[in-house]
Length: 287
Image 1 (cartoon, helix red, strand yellow):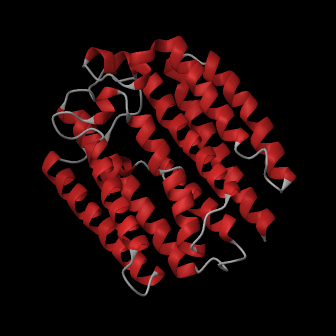
Image 2 (cartoon, helix red, strand yellow):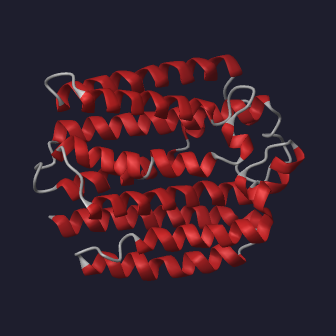
């Protein structure tokens, strides 16, 4: 069990919670949250993120990126807590569960098959494919510098505004801004991880965005991601959230620019806590 928990990387899962809950909060009170839709959307997003984490563990191990010289926390395969065969099975069954919960979500949200159902079905298949293709296959996009873009899209506007649309059947500009904000914060988490691992990634041909930009450029971009995420909450009607999102980002931006790579795990934890707090504060202010 310890190996599965480590491979699932629980500390990244609040990103899925933040995206889905932000969309649901924006839909309130029009939707009264429609709890069955919200919970199924959240479960599907969590499963998709776990699939991505499991696939990342497997792909990096098979390509030799996860080895004893790696700077970040040791992974499940790297530590021998799971075998490659068992992890492949876990990827398959978790992906199947994500697909199943997504289908049940659409059944609960829509009585008949229409354009919206087909769109969400295609989006779900694309999200599942992106979760697997990040480090798996001959040409994984995570090894070519597109990981942050995928994180931005699938755990930003698509998850936040998709949840809002499932609950309200409409669009609102403030929700789109929140989707962009959460997307930038999610991309910031991945970029921080890649800056920390940059030396090892370079040695094994993993050309992440951080490797492509180098240390100064990637840190400036990380600071920009954090700032742009906070900017998405400037028009927020609840001023306590606007203030916290804005001023809470400032120390994180300073750390992004100044923290040595081996110590970036602390910044990772703080960014995730910052995202969680913004989300919880949004729920509290909505009540």
